[in-house]
Length: 279
Length: 125
Image 1 (cartoon, chains in turn purple, cyan):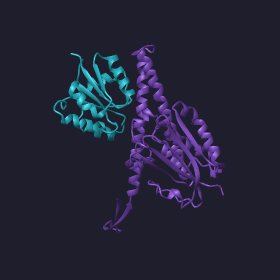
Image 2: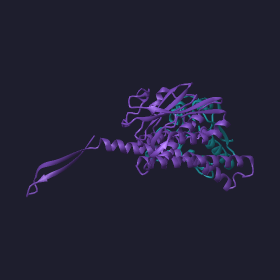
Image 3: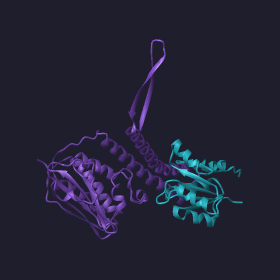
Image 4: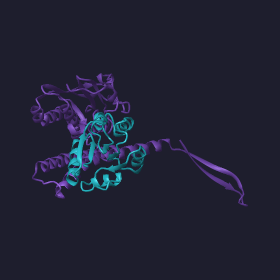
């Protein structure tokens, strides 16, 4: 779309002798404005929903409309507590994503062993996995990476958290690390992100594989976008904010890696990402 | 005659809070439905005096439920009030233009929600 500005050109007698027209291509600006508007709308909705539950529950009790000691009062307090957790997670994720996307969250890259990160993440999730009768199998020879270990931990934490949330009992989640090169196994996934820059150096390939319900093929291409959840009810039942994978995507890209997913409905999903090796 | 209010919202927490708010401030009967796909059938069976309809719901959203309600003989005369977290003026205007009795924005006040419904529908009780 072109935005035209027209100015009349006049001579000494103030007679119009012509016009000067400047055309500015505003297509991109309009697209950005539209995206911003959509983002604000989605954020507004995502924030207002838990806020409504918190505000309503507490107002009912504070105004004496419901007795806090009654069964109904206790239920409302539970709703307020649960919704406030959801709100905190959401606000944290929104701020985190904003910091990552604006470049304010700079990576602190250093040499680190993949084993240090995978073992820490597996340890963190052991209690919750045991409680849900899910086995976490780690296969990691210990590869030297050039990475921000906190951020890499964040990626694996998000992926494992999702895997556990969507895994049935008595199944296994496999977390493995291996070598990948630019002509290696990550070149032929069914879904790849075309926006990533191709890493020049050889990389480590991380995989997180679950035996959960899988992701419909039509949703695979949008799964790393903000506020994309295959099932909206997941945000309530599973506690997701719809931003976890967008954060993973951003962190992996900042490392110069790629992230993608392969999935078979009813059989499970496998998330892959690459991180450059230490030189 | 006791009013019958129907709430269609996929958020269980919102349904509980809304039901508690209306029951604490009125003698209206509140019936609820958390599935947008079942909303029209429940409304046809229950014939409420008004439907409070959430807009953003998975699979079938509130605007589609409204179309189904308007198309069904048994439900087309039941007034519908949208309940929405969409707060922007343009969004609210677009919703109002769909032929609803009104739009109530989340978060709502438990003390005031029944009066908002009365005001939108011109009820004096």
